[in-house]
Length: 98
Image (cartoon, rainbow, N blue to C red; front, side, top):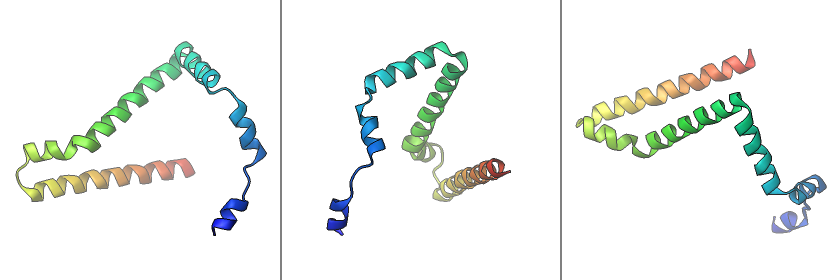
């Protein structure tokens, strides 16, 4: 198996992309974000949502332990969170296909 991996070569398309300047790409992206109002607002909204999700996933259980003392209530709350998350994913998946 190792010999198989060693025999693989990187595609020439990928090698061409390495030659592009990363800093130039970052500059183009930051200019586009700063100039176009819709992209800037979308960027701000998605950043806030990502930070909220990170905070929830890191500290959510600590808040549950603070406000609920019963383990059964915590498990029901976590079950509701998982159910609504799954339901939202199902709805989003169905709406993309239709």
